[in-house]
Image (tube, one colour):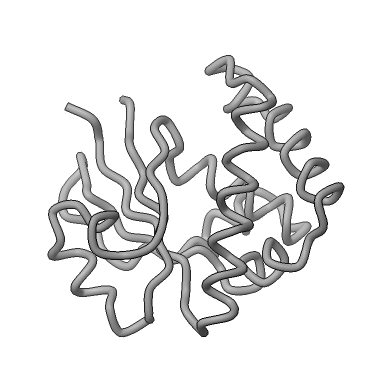
Length: 144
């Protein structure tokens, strides 16, 4: 199953509005990415936090699940948002390299440059969210 994720910075109290939105990326600052599901975001969190994958997946807080096809709304853990916001260019590149080397990204034949672009987009949004006191939400839906 292919998915599309909208990654956005929003206030915690806006979660219900995000759920109700048909396309939240139109209303909140962020970006869209195809093919990145909860497991891949959990792997990014695991790399940033030093946790095992299972622990990281539990930390990725599911706030809402409309159905088995989505949309699903998750909150990216605050500690990893903070870490992304503070990593320098070399640190972000290292995280991107590690993430690209994981089984899920390798199995889908993601180019290292594309994974690094995802990490950089996450870091830029994390810096904005941190500066504005916002959280990062993941709105994931199965593609039709």
